[in-house]
Image 1 (cartoon, rainbow, N blue to C red):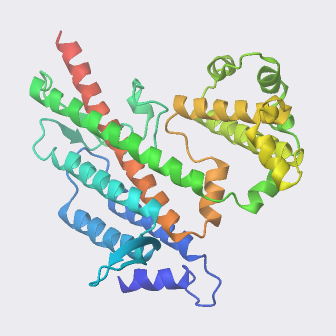
Image 2: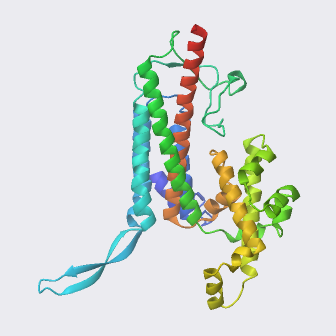
Image 3: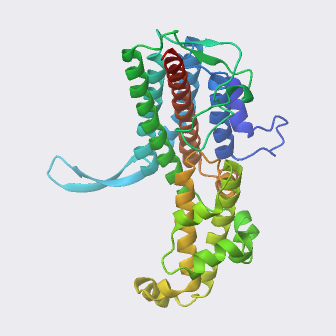
Length: 365
């Protein structure tokens, strides 16, 4: 703990020369590294080892304790002995921490309960083979893995009895899969909301393309601009993305174009503040070309993330985390991100066991 405390103060610069990263980035890295240490070798659907569980709880409690001192002041009426009402200010955790941190702690505890529930399981693992793991994520939980030997060979493969799992065991697996999936959705929602609140770094703004059309390409641009009723789903169907890598590349380009058009829309209305307010209150901006394109780019990006729920972070998200200086946001973002990853892995591990059970039962028939 002394070592971790020292690294936090030094900003990960062991030379002590003051060239380390800011506190927010250091804490974010600490949460990420702790997750890798505790769960990095977890490739099986089984309870976490006691020493690992203790390490996770002890060190996360230490990192999260910082939030106890991130406060805001709210007015409170205090009644004196003589009946006089006096308004005073009292402190409480900052609103984003007050709302999200208890929820994340609850999700964390629920994930540990899901893992603990597989203490006495009917399935086991072979040391060699492959299955979906931390390094092999699919775009959908419903993906069927048909070529396991082409996956990572060192990842253990689930095995089930020759006659398959009992109905009770299958029911338990499905129930825990649904629980982990809901935890994944909740963690992802919190993470997305925290990232949305982070400031956009100047370096990202400076790197935006001068033209959204040039960033997206003529085909996508024409579909977005000329269509009377824009359908992001139909556009994605036409693009026929072959991999998540292509989807992430498209997400980066769409997001960059969206902010390019938003910036142009703001620049085209650089009037006095009162006129700006009146314009925002009216529907005049709705007919602005840049405004329309920015809105359509936003809907396309949303549809893309829905279709590929396990996309890696976009360039903007990565840039926000790298340049973020808000310690509270850094803790909430990193905590929700690692819980999201763990929940995804648990769902994938359960799917692998169910897939193996289905395969064995089909062979029996």
